[in-house]
Image (cartoon, rainbow, N blue to C red; front, side):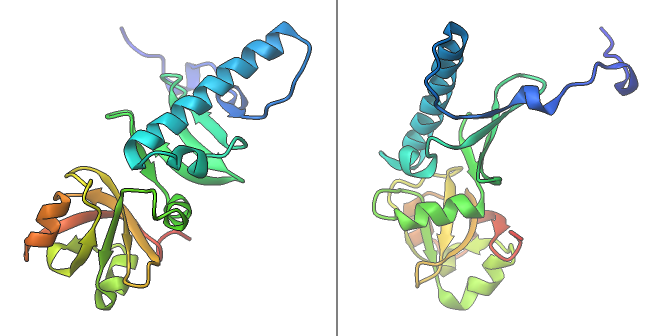
Length: 193
């Protein structure tokens, strides 16, 4: 079956795919119904964050006033915003989050309960902040729960956020290896603006 050309498709209003999660008690049955749906969506987002980053992180990372953008094609959750800034993208391939630098900074404030941090040497921090990959020889510490393909946050020795990316090695391998890419950087903090 052929898809219609772009010029022949019905226009989609972005407002029909964008919901602001606001909890207001209204006496209408429809309002209560939508409130329950949005409550379940927010609960799913928080549960996914708890699974991916550690227990209790979902509530700290995604407060009740986040904005949720849904995919036009599938109707599934795609982006989560807070005060107009993108916090995370829900990857359709595995159902987990890709974080923005803003979300990484929020998680760094709750460093004790999160399980997604890799600390690198200060002398390489400028290279990583500019988007360069983190090599195993520069890794000082890595949280023990990190596995290959996990979403991780790169910190310098002073615990400042440098970048977000995807682990190529497990935590044990990052500490043991002296060669190879430990974390493939998706976005450095210098690139965030």
